[in-house]
Image (cartoon, rainbow, N blue to C red; front, side, top):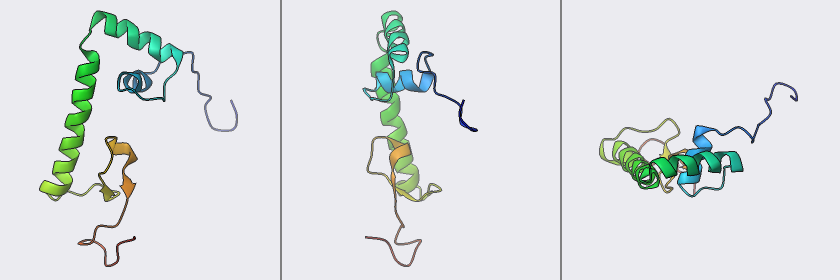
Length: 100
């Protein structure tokens, strides 16, 4: 281990990276893919359900921001399918000057 940062052990699968694999992402490793494939063998609908869950999350966040007027802490622009990767911006009705 270096400093206070734990080392990433890519030989041990992690549920978030398995989920990333099912969604077609690139942030996963062979151990994650192996477990993902094993789960898919037992539960073939997992990819369809993972994608449906991600789509629902996107719709829910967009509704809360746009429809219900609830702002995320970052006041993010929701132009991504991945809510965690939204680009921060200043909302015109919240801030006096919105960045370009």
